[in-house]
Image (cartoon, rainbow over all chains, first blue to last red; front, side):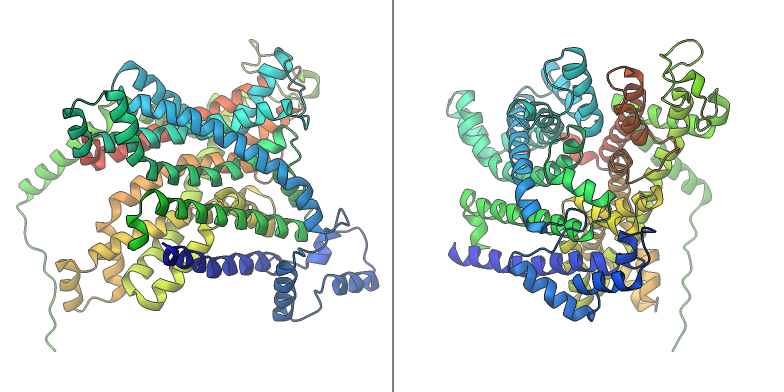
Length: 307
Length: 300
C-alpha cells in the first residue's frame, strides 16, 4: 500500500512539471510582443517599454526566464498582475475560496441527485421511473450551464423575486449558482451510476445474495452499491474537473467573485501573469484531486495497490 | 527481389452488392428504429435544412440594425421579437444554426486530425515516440477541459476561429487515446503482418490497413464529441471569447440578452432553446449510433 502511494505521488512530478512548462510557454508562444499587447495603442515610449520589459524579466533569455518562473512558483510567487498591480498569489488567495465553496456545494448536489436517481433507475430498469429519470439526465447533458443559469435568474430572481438579480456573496447567494452547476453535473452522474449499478446487479454474487434470501434493499446497498463504489468514486473525481470548468461560466453569470470570474476578466484584459497563475493553480488542484481519487481506489479495492 | 503485386480476389458482383446492401439496411434499421435515434436524426436533419435554406427562411437580415424596432416582444411581425438594436431574433436564430453546425464539424475535424494522427503514430511506432506523445496527452489531460480552452484562447486571442481551434485541441486527447489502444490491438493482426511482408510502407499500413479497421469507435466518439464541442464553443462565445458581435451566434446572443433579462424574456429564451435542441439531437443520435454499431453493449 505504502509503495503504491509513493509510486503514485512520484508519478505526479513529471505531470506537474509538464503543467509548469505549458503554463510558462503560454506567455512565450503568444504571437506578438506581450508588452505591446498589454498596452495596445496606449503609449509608445520606448523607454517605458524597456522598463516594463525589464520589470517582467522579458529581456532575459528564455531558459533564464523559465528558471526564474519555476523558482518563483516554488516560492509561492506567481508574478505581478498588470492591471490590478497586486501579487497574483494575493488575488488568487482572495478569490479561490469562493470557487472551492461553490464547487463543493455543487458537487454535493450533483452526487445526491445523481446517486439517488441513478440507483433507483437501475433497480426499476425499464419502468416509467427509469425512463423519466433518464430523459431528465439526457436533457441535463444537453443543457448549456449558461442558459440554465439565465433561466434560474429569470424565474427565481426576476419573476419570483426570491433572490437578488445580481449575485450577492452571501450563503443565500450561493444557492442559484450551485444548483445550476449541480443539476447539470447530476445528469452525467445519474447516467454513469445507473450503468455501473446495472453491471454490478448482474454479477453472480448479487444473485447469490438474493438466493440466500437477503432483502432486496440490503442486497442493493450492501452487496451491489459497495462494489459499484469504485467506478462511482472515479465519476465523482471526473465530475470535479467538469465542475471546476462549469464554475468559470456560472461565476460570470451570477457575479460570484471566484477564480473563474477573475480568469475571464484577466483574459479580457490580457493580464498574462494573472491568467498564467490561475491556470497553474487550477490545473494543480485538478491533478491533486485526481491523486486523491486514485488513492481512494486503493482503499476501496485493495487489489489495485498490488497490481 | 520478386515483386509481388496485390491482386484483389474476384467476388461475384451480385453477391457483393446484395450482402453489402443487406448489411447497411440492417444497420440503418438498428440506428433509426429506436425512438431516440429517430428523434435525434430528425433534429439533426431539420437543423441541416434550416442551415442550408437560412436565407429563404429568415424574414430579415440577421445583422442589419433597425433601432426604431428595438426590443419588440414576439408578435406577428417578429416571431421571436427583436433585440436591443432592432434585429429580428428569429432570423438570427436561423442563421445561428449555420455557425453552430460549422463550429461542431470544424472543431471535431481538428480533434480528429490531431488525435488520430497522434494515436496512430504512438500505437504503431511504440517506444520513444509512444512515450513522448502519450506523456504530452497526459499533460493536456491534467487541465480541466474548459481551462485548457481558455488557456489556448488566451494565447491566440478571442475569435470564433480560435475558439474552434481551442475546442479541437481540447477534445483531441480522447481520440489519441482511443486510436492508440485500437492500433495496439490491430497491429499484430494477420493482415497487417501480411501488408508488412508485402512491402507496404508504414504510412500505407497505418492509413490504409489499420485506420479503416478502427473506424467505428472513432465515429462513435466523434458523434459524441460534436455536441460537447458545440456546447463549449457556445460557452466561449457567451463569455465573449468566441464569436464576436454582430455574428448571430447563439451563445453570444444569450449574453447580449442578459442585460435585458428584467424586461425582455425573449432574448434569453429562443437562442437557448436552439442550443439545447441541437445538442440534444446530436446526443440522442450519438447514443443510438453507439448502440447500433455495438449491439452487444445494449444487451443489458
